[in-house]
Image 1 (cartoon, protein in one colour):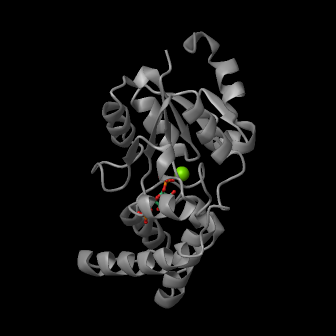
Image 2 (cartoon, helix red, strand yellow):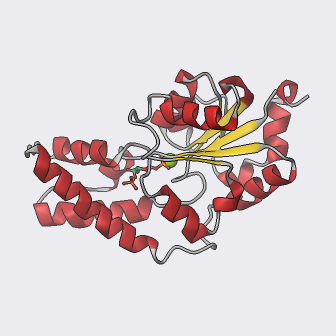
Length: 220
Ligand code: B16
Ligand code: MG
């Protein structure tokens, strides 16, 4: 029986991809690195340090560890500053409605994000009250596609993976959900999240009614 839901943040609850893009672009311009939307797409759902490595690999760049950490911190400063303009109007369409509905029906809800800025984002959205458990980039050391962040969420909710549905927009996030034996809902195109149990193009279509209809034998 499904008793809990675990949500990724960026790309599911809100769309921070443009802000991440702007921050990486600014850093890349300063470094003389090529960076475009195709490279940015590869960063979906992966950690900050993995992200800078992807950008450096794209540019055949190599730097010592201390410099890489410094540059990633610089990108983060730019990104965090941009979060100041985020407001409770910035949920992806349908996300707030789904979270409200889950609260009304008494399901347990956890966040399972790779972002170390997840609490700041939830505060800007005024969304913290929708979550019983907050799992973010500080909660576990192994990032998606490892299942650790979702296992952290289910354990803290006191649930087994097969009692939870994970919502994810990233290929690596759906991989992580499957690796942990969670049920999964993919948000985005077939070529990215088509391996999820159920897929919607956007959160606007991902209503509790639709989810329950698909997983009907798991809702009793
Ligand atoms: P930060 P999610 C992920 O969040 C983003 O999708 C990804 O683009 C970003 O690099 C990562 O968080 C780390 O974010 O630099 O804020 O720690 O999709 O797992 O909610
Ligand atoms: Mg995401």
